[in-house]
Image 1 (tube, rainbow, N blue to C red):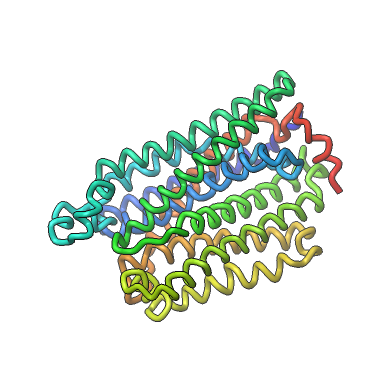
Image 2: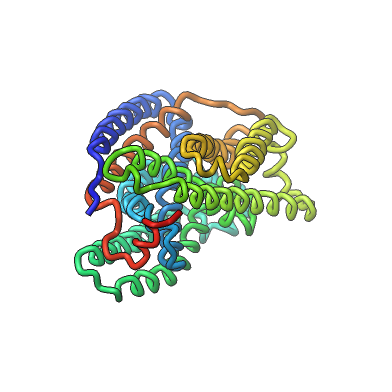
Length: 387
């Protein structure tokens, strides 16, 4: 069985140091400006969550498809998915500071807004907290079940386990999508409770898939350059991952454009107000940046077969997309607090480093607990011989 490279221990240690430093600085920011702290914390929390969320979705897709494309990355998917209990802890400060972020959570808000009064049965602090707990219970349970059966497959080689994981993924994917959709509505769309979009959950899910695939590409590069995986992950594998990344970039752009076109054609005032600061206000250049660096540039570069087989260049695209994923989530959330202009704050950089560093340390720890390749997987031989 292939064990993990010793360098993972250094990654775990260094990431934890960066993460704890970021959290300490974030704590100082909370003392100085609680309002800004919680607003920056929301973006950081959703950004970090999107990686294990996308990895869980990709893991279930791999079990459902039954192909060899995801076998080489299955342990990365599983390790990231097992971090949901930690990310659930990250949600606690957000629940404690809801009144700093969500207008509808303020006690007097419903009394002065008929629409909020109408939505009070759904948009209230107690039900919001219950839903948040439910989301993490669903995601954590699915990750635990699939990881447990995968480990049992390593130990016993029981061929029935592959079928069981496929069945769990079939039902789990439905629960996963529903939970992810409502979570995106709760945490991001409800920042403007007067606005709604039926495509929002799909748009958020497409972004989470990009986050996960970009992160897994960088993890695969790290593993491929070190024993014992050097020579096992080859350009043909990265070619497949590059094609998947291209597909997710197109899906993200499709849902983004579809949402804009539908709202533009409808010309309903309460829906247009969400786009106004992002299209003609002070945020227009961030919108342009997303179009160019989140879609146009990665799309045309990822069309190249040679680039997808060049690990270093493909990893640069993955890193760019990880940065742009933060920009996209910031673009979704921050205009609710500052619609007239972009107002970056040092907490916007410190908190992602803090939460991301602690998360990466926990991910590295989980990745070290199991062999890097799933033993007794029916498609393992096909994946290893892939050219």
